Length: 220
Image: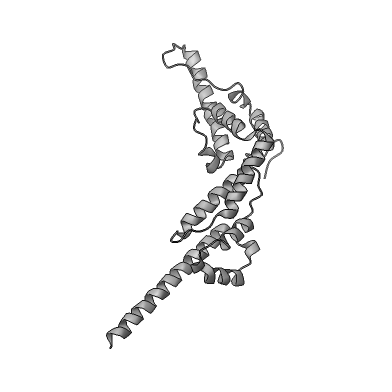
């Protein structure tokens, strides 16, 4: 509950690939907290050899702390996949400018990137001998990039893609999952867990059958 005169803290807007909308919300949040000056014009740390008065040093420490707060907002707003592509994160302005450079670009360029990612997504296939976790990582890497460029990547789309691109040895698992689960409600994590469990059962059953075969052969 909030008392009269109190305010609910605004949620930090998560970057969803739509840069113009996200940057507007983020700028509004930072302005409301009087932190926008840390982005435009930005905080510049004084050179280490510069001589400062006590007042200047105190002011610089305050600005550095505010910049860390803005960086914390940006770190919470941007997912790890995107953050990993930002090489320079020394100041809030570095992060903001990098995001602007990467995602504000020409709409035609964005569409071109997205079309290439769609082709890559559709042609993904599980390799022979590839582990379930490895294949999921490859699929999700492409899916996350597509989402960054504005594609609506709901779980059902990724789930259906994975189910139709597994190797033949998973055919019986796919049939079992499709018969026993509501695919529309199945999350990617649940699918991965199901595949791993089914594979372990299959391997255990094969091991038991092999042991029985060896035992039977030893009797003769």
